[in-house]
Image (tube, rainbow, N blue to C red; front, side, top):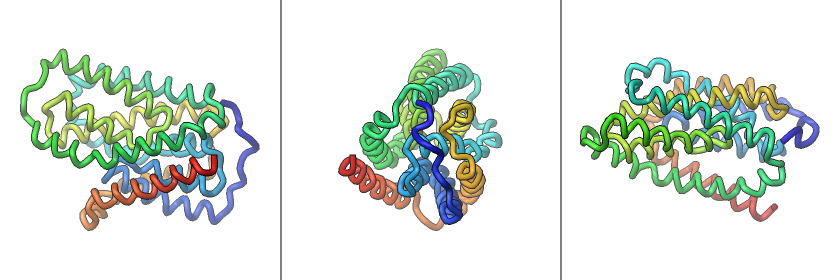
Length: 262
């Protein structure tokens, strides 16, 4: 993609706001699997070009999923080893396409519709969670078939994760709910590990590009990590569904505004 313009000037107020937004994003990543939408929209509101905002947010995301390292014991690695490898490769391809091949104009044209898709996915989450709870421990496919189907499903979601990533956590949960009989704890741990892998790959690709706004990245990465740690305690007092509806509402308004200003 190249540099979509001269590097934006980052003001102190923007960094302060970014810190608070990063905390919220970390909490949302824990509760609603939708955290990256918020800092992306705020950065665009500050006038940062969309490709730069997208790359900066994706590069800052890995720290908010570090808890996956403590949840590996809950991940069925015998089944997930191959899907994880293919997911890493797919996320690399997605990030490369956006960083090197997509123009800023193309990115801006597509973004509103991607945001609308994120809203649909977010509002669908509760049904996915219910399906996981209802389907746990029911036999679906053989381990070999499950591995093959998860590889295909997670390769697609990881391609998207490397390119944009908003609400990808819900997509990962949806794939697992359709293809496995794993309980929620197992599926959620798998989602966190997958997000850690794909966002880590995204960091490497975008860090090698000229798209990451590093001062904002530093503040966002740390605040998202702290928000991820605080997520469990904070969401005990505010239902996750309320957070998802709030994010969906803001995102819908933002998508409409982007279409009107295109």
